[in-house]
Image (cartoon, rainbow, N blue to C red; front, side):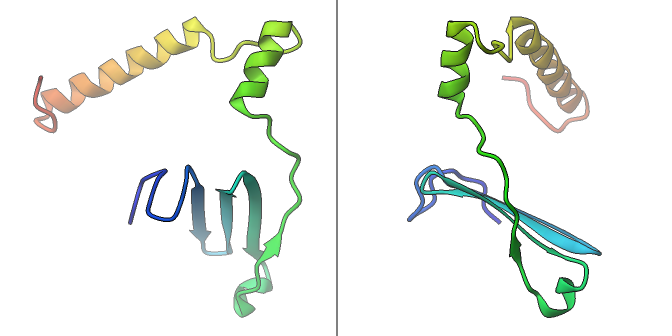
Length: 104
């Protein structure tokens, strides 16, 4: 198991695989190319994977420029960031209270 964006031979790549009782999905981003593949239904018995067409996803830079130009929302905003920080603080406090994390 590995969790890194910069493993040997990979530059900021992403690969996520999900497996269930009725099939599997693979999401990957490699060499600036996104892909979605699935092995579902009858294909499970033969391990046949199929490409699924997906619309392109705008980059964070494209979102940022759209927000500056007023043609897109600036998300996440400060309120969302503050709400996430509260959750992170609560998780850290809970982990400390249960002996899972030592305070700094």
